[in-house]
Length: 182
Image (cartoon, rainbow, N blue to C red; front, side, top):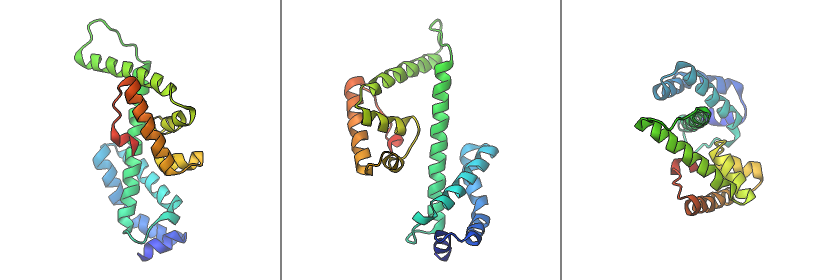
C-alpha cells in the first residue's frame, strides 16, 4: 500500500520500482492473449502510461497489482475493439460479389448489410443520443469518458445508451452485444 500512496503523490522512483516489478508480468499477460510480441509490448507501455496518467485515482482499498491488471484488461479490450473496427472498415472496402458466395462469404455479406442498416438506424437517433452512441460504438469510449467529453453524468450516458438500444431494437431488430456497452 506504501507504493500506491507514493505513486499517487507522483513519486517517479516508486513508479520505476513498480514498473521494474510488474512490466514482465503485464507483458506476459498481453502476449498470452494476443500472441503478437509487438502488440504485447505496445499494450504494456499503454498500461503503464495509464497508470501514471490516472495515478491520482488509485485506491488504497485494492492492491496495486489488481488495479494495474484492471488497467491492462481495459487496454486489451480497447485493442480488440479497435481491431474489430479495423476489420469492419476492411469489409466495407472490399468488393463482395454475390455470385457463388461461400458460406463464409455469405456471412460476411450479411454482416455488411446489417452494418449498413445499423448505421441508418443510428442516424434516426436524437442528436445527443447519436453522439453518445457514436462515441461508444465507433470510438470505443467508456461511459466515464463520454460523460467527461459531453459534461454530463455517467448515469445520463447510461440512460441514453439504454434508450438508444431500445430504439435500435424497435427500428431495426438489431441485437447489440452487451460487452460493447460496458
